[in-house]
Length: 348
Image (tube, rainbow, N blue to C red; front, side, top):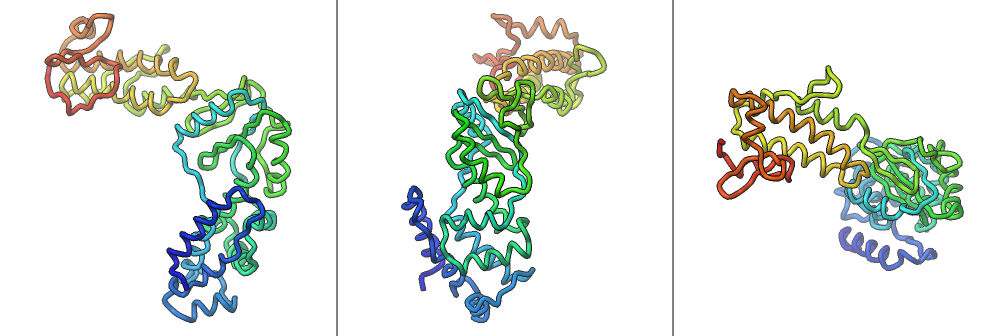
């Protein structure tokens, strides 16, 4: 019998070769799971062959589950994208979309999920093994979670779909495109968190990680109002007792050099900018954050040098209304990129 690694690689190659062939089915998954090289004892292999195996908390059971999951992974690979890539793709593909649905993955029902797996797998022995784990652990085990993922991938086929963890977006240019999969979603799930009739009003929004998604003229990704405040709180840079908020001295930075302080504030601004590259209101929100961090930086520099805010601002003023320091032949400017603090230890 082939080694497990060779068999798994063959499954992956077959999956890639036949990914566009809806009639092709895999029928040797149970053979892979029963491979003697995967288990230290012969009686374990025999228990799988005569189907007397029952899932439990033993190491043997974990081996079987991991083997079955590896076989499913080979046939149903998952595309992994970063948060920023997903948001970018969503905005590109849903730019002219008239329909948008959003929510969280609900629990998938067992029988419809098995039926969806049968579209690519024709292996009764593997199916019986999978059912044993689903009856034992439901969708909480690694096999159950994998099958749930497979179910959703099938349900969303044909749609412009971008998923991130438990959140998801669906987009299509016509109602017909999205309706082709809605029946599958409803059949597979006990409860579906979708807006009815699959169109979100302009003022209705849903959480999308740290951003907000709104259905209006396609797709908008907006930074929540609390995001700027949370950032200011995290770094201790603002006084919220007055409106508008005022920047304040950050005592933990007082032992740094002036350039180190400036670079620290720049790093906070740059981290916020990179986190929200795809947000439509990034410029406005970054402007709010920049205004308060600028004030906080001036107060911190004044306290560090036993000076006043006005005198520090006057000494930092560069051509074009910018604030910064000149170190050698370089200008280090507030709000322009995130340079390394280690780049300079020069005190003004």
